[in-house]
Length: 88
Image 1: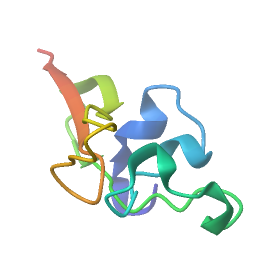
Image 2: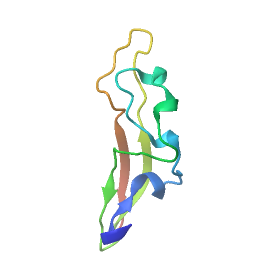
Image 3: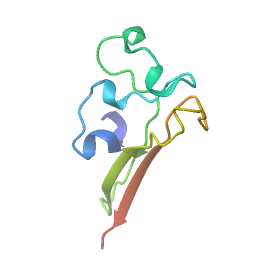
Image 4: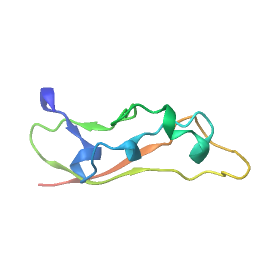
């Protein structure tokens, strides 16, 4: 990525697909995929800039934990999480 930033989503083996899309308008899985433009429209990112290369990305996750039946969501976006490891 330009300017030396590492995209944690791609760094953990994910590809640019609609799976990385995190917006759901408080509808969760009911949010219509047809409204999405082809390709990735990721808007929630975790970027890492580590010029000394001492930080490794262990994992990247989109937390889709919610109560779909009751329609309870903490946000209109799914949270994005990354786990890092410091190296010597």
